Image 1 (cartoon, rainbow, N blue to C red):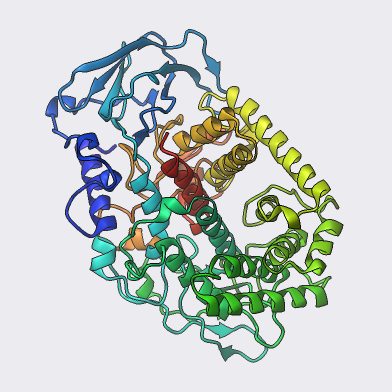
Image 2 (image 1 turned 180 degrees about the vertical axis):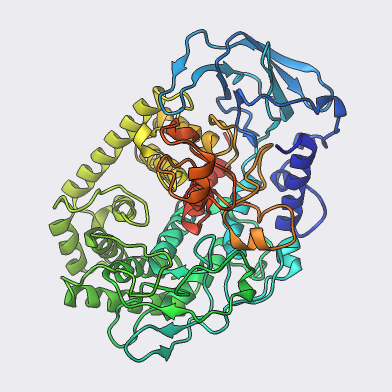
Length: 591
């Protein structure tokens, strides 16, 4: 476990990396001088053992937030203690009735210190138990987090050098400058340099990339004020929000994956087998572009139509190119209604991203093309296909993308909407949100996951449920929706049974050994900051998890912070992007 002192040094390093300037905490940049949290006065007396029975958001809380700690197995009095001088600033008693949490086996009591609002750094002490990790109470507590979650995309850049000016200790050489060879009867070279590595390996996958971009561009469209400051990337200072500059790096690569002749889009680019734990520039195996697929083509059409709308007033030439590419991809979908879904060609053993159903990709594409162009043919497709039962209308994962289409439909110009469809979508979305609120009320850690929901990438589901709740709140302001979404963020940041912050570089007990090749192969002790780990996975789908965990253990505890556990501890861009959306909402809304 990291000590408080080490955790603080990591947080300071991330602030320096994001700002590229003097060590002024990013979260304080917009404050009046009288509101700035005083510098931390490190006190060795506070270096006492942290109890793994006291679970808090290890980053912290905004002053007016509901502030609740989860305590496993103990009730009684608690104290809130100022970190710098050990002074007790608030006292209270935990709840007397516990929640018996089925997913963890825990008996959870709650310590509520919501009424205390003075900014500073604190920890919680529970009589007979011990102390919590320390945390901030600060209006801008999520600003560094939002920036780091987004800047992870920069660290995933392929084909360019990451300079120390922007990457700090995680600088590295340019990689994969020979992308790539089209895997066909006669192989040929097609220039596809650029884009982002998808996950802990160096593959570049079309569908996950489109889903990642959807989360980012949707976050910008909903909460532009959360992205008004620079991230310290090469494009910073060009009068374009850095989130759009970073997204453009991936959009440019996606355009290269389209077959110019047919409009279809290639499924992925990777080596035939996963590389070992080496740096990206040491990966010299030939990389292959695999065949066109309907899921890749559908998500491409959707994200290009969405991007055309977002960038219209920023880069009109790109916006036109993106829309043309989206329309060409749509024509491929129309001409290939029964195209088989993708499977890896023989000899290719990297991530397949297989999907038995491409109806949801077509639905999302039609919504975005209609919203951007206003052409009736796209709306007719949406009206004819939204209620066929072929897909879940509010799923936001890489395999089920219809939720992006449904949300986009609900927020397009009212004059474009079909009243019956928009009412149906709104009602269904809100009913689901109300269900998530009820589920969270029975969960000891206040999230909406059932025992069966701890699968590969469970933290993506945690964040996607939070997005659903935030969207419901925007459609029908209800404090329970926003609060439950916030509870999901608290879980990601340490208020969980493991007291694990699932974000590298953040919190007193952050992920230290992610399944991420650059972090494992470089000489830097700390992993690249701002990465979201996959989270508990009761299926135990890798040898490390099978060796270190137990079959039948409580599903929410089935996690190991080990680089060999790709089924619990890998990172991906599309697990980060929903976290960017959620963090941006709470970073923007500082009340």
